[in-house]
Amino acid sequence: MWGRDSNPSFCAIVLGLAATTHGSNDLANNFKREATATSSFNPKNATLAEFNAHAREWFETIMSGAWGSRDIGIHPGAHNSLGGDPGRDFWVSPGEPAFWAHHANIDRVWWMWQMLDPELRAANVSTAVNGPITMYDLYEPHKNATIFDLQNLGWVAEGQEVALGELMSTTEGMFCYVYE
Image 1 (cartoon, helix red, strand yellow):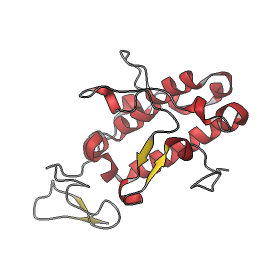
Image 2 (tube, helix red, strand yellow; image 1 turned 180 degrees about the vertical axis):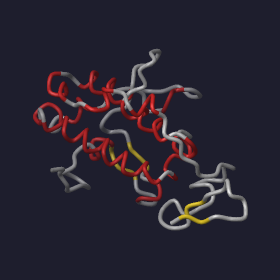
Image 3 (tube, rainbow, N blue to C red; image 1 turned 45 degrees about the vertical axis):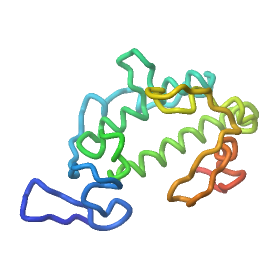
């Protein structure tokens, strides 16, 4: 899994999806990991008990954090807990092997939340989409996302675009799985 050159501070993943020196792009970062206790021991990351009582906006805030507050949310909190590069570096974080387990768990939590009220949260996918279609809205005008917006699936399905609404269910459309 790991390879090492003559420099003891350099580690590279040599097997699997992340088997490149610098992840999936040409940034000059090497792999390093440094767990950060501040994010790792956030009590919110340990409980999902309130999920049934709240609407999508609450779920999004718990998962993604609230803009302008110190609460970074469960999803970014796990990235920060991994620390290092590529864990905290958004652009190369898929090069961190734990990224894939983390995002599988985010999907599992999303599914659990949907199943607490499937008529509202799963069957009616129009209630599951919120916010701008462009990430962070830094450089271009945005419109709010809809279930009809097309998503480019990149290397997963070269040249294929799928409506966002078709990607919202784990048991319909392209997907066929549940969590136990």
